[in-house]
Length: 115
Length: 111
Image (cartoon, rainbow over all chains, first blue to last red; front, side, top):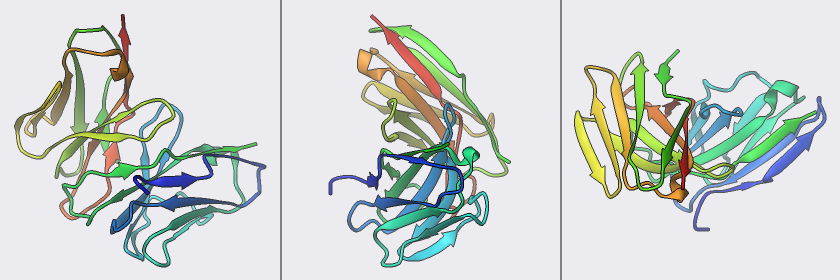
């Protein structure tokens, strides 16, 4: 596609449910990022992939959060046993090769509401 | 943690100029980005500064002073479509791909 695509656009989960959020980066982009954006705040880094390798997962808030990118393209962010504090917009971003001065292309995000 | 400060809100009139300031106190510095985010939409790239000085791109300009830990984004000839949140983000370390974002400045353009 032309841009970064995320699905679902909205997700409502009951506390304790598992959720899976999908990101389709721009075709050919090597680098992929997940960020979490709480209401009225800037995005907070969660994790980073270069191709299929997860090079940095220092931002994942707990072991309930897990991300994968098995074939170096589509990525999935999974949250187990969701809690109310997980409610946020989850943004995916990609960049061409991952050099440090490259701009990121963001998706529109998945808005997760945990009830 | 990293500290990146921006004003929460600004209001300006169509056709005017607005300057959004960003100050940062981070453990290192390897570049500063500005992104625009309309409500409910993806952030989109506006500018990148790594050296001191002014970068001009059409109606938008961005300035950086590394010694002062300071940047600003200047929006000229404001249009209604410029109403959005503006995010300042710092790359802290060379070779570190992640960005540390400020909370964003919501700009409202009035007719």
